[in-house]
Amino acid sequence: MEQISAMMDGELDEAQMARQLARLRTEPGLQESWGTFHVIGDALRGERRLSDTLARQVLEKLEVEPTVLAPRRTAAKRMRTYVLSAAASLSAVALVGWLAFFNSPLVPQTQIATAPPKAAPSVTAVSAPQISNVPSDGTMNEYLIAHQEYSPSTAIQGLAPYIRTVSGSQPATGR
Amino acid sequence: MKGAWSLVALGLSLPAWSAEPSGPEDGLSWLRIMASASRQLNYTGTFVYRHGNETEASRIVHFVNEAGGEFEKLETLDGPPREVIRTNDQVTCYLPSTKTILIEKRSARRFPVLFPVELTSSLTDHYEVRQTGMDRAAGYDCRIVALVPKDRLRYGHQFCAEASSGLPLRAKTFNEKGVLLESFAFTELRLGGKFDRDQVKSAYAAKSQDWKVGRSASRSTDRPGRTGWVLANELPGFRKLTESQRSIAGRQATVSHLVYSDGLAAVSVFIEPLPKTMPTRNLSHQGAVNIYVRLVSDYMVTALGEVPAETVMRIANSLEYRGGTGR
Image (cartoon, rainbow over all chains, first blue to last red; front, side):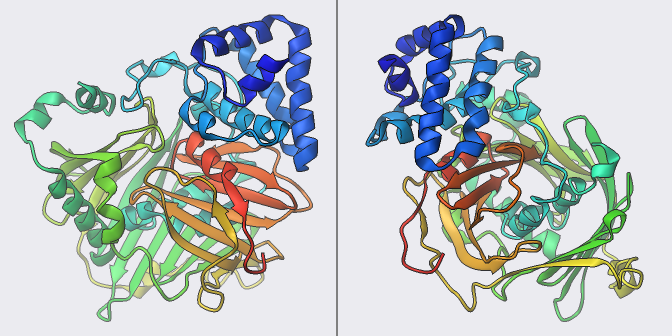
């Protein structure tokens, strides 16, 4: 239990992290704890809706993720664990990001991964090329347009990047 | 070695780079040239936008009149018709299938006219800027400028700028694994041409009288400065560009809008009171733009930008309300 909490707070080193993730994969009891931590954290922060799915996504990821995963090292260590659960759910958010984006744990920061594109066939909802598109209800289009005005890419390319914002506004096309 | 791998990851050939070495300053000045070319030139062409397995062709017309006014029109050629019109500081999207018009009006202070020096001066701290040779696009010779990120907080970019005018003919974005995320490329282009107002008018201008209209406008002029929201931990290289209270189409309440940029990529953070219906996902993307939603007490925070998901998540997660003004 303490290890789970430490893991979520980013306090474990790589080897410990790997061991805990391996345990999470195999021990149903621990999986429950993992979920419980999120519920507590969510309740404290009033965030129940959003990260309800988070713990589940991590667990789903664990099911398909055979490799050793890198913990969030430096940034997480800087973070003070003043409230366990709040910190825990923060780290969990970061962890999901890492689960999704760090398939290869030993890639140095400054090096773009040299693995071929096909090396990332993960199927969770959160990994980069596979994450689902903006829900086509149009709630993000206004934000995308508002953002585009301030984006340096608009400076370089003019109106062209706006194609993104109008692409997502066509649910009927089934894209 | 790292540099070499990055270049390989960006699909660039080493010999081309070795044969034509040049300093990062040249690359930076090409970025500025590209930015000014796309604003100041008259051009008409067709470009293809590619993301994931989707491709979409669009027609684009850009004119500058004698007074320096900027007029631009983008119309999609594939799928349902859509149009985006720029008239100086106002951008209007026409979406005929839903009979909707979205209008985005900037405050008078234009950004970015060109890359601001204070941003680009630190660009090389976070990207390797390289000119990696020549290529051809849409029948024009073009010069390749690549920006290879030095960390995982930003994407890699590669531009090919028309050799004489500097107009970007091709733009590619690569993720942290060096995989192409999206690209824009002209397939046909005519440089020059005389200003013609009709060519940059919407085909829907007359038919859209009874369409739904959503207006967004920055109110930074009347409510300058602070929103009360700050980042507890700033991300390396990302500096706050603007901060404003504003109206957003389709939203009743005033929204706080903060923009962070490393000079090339930008992340917008929007903070609004909890909406009645929440987005169904907290992490999603639109092309190379990642979108992350999180709740902070009674507010919904949306961070989005053409950066890796980790970056929007870290920015959103470090957002705090420190008070000072009305939210």
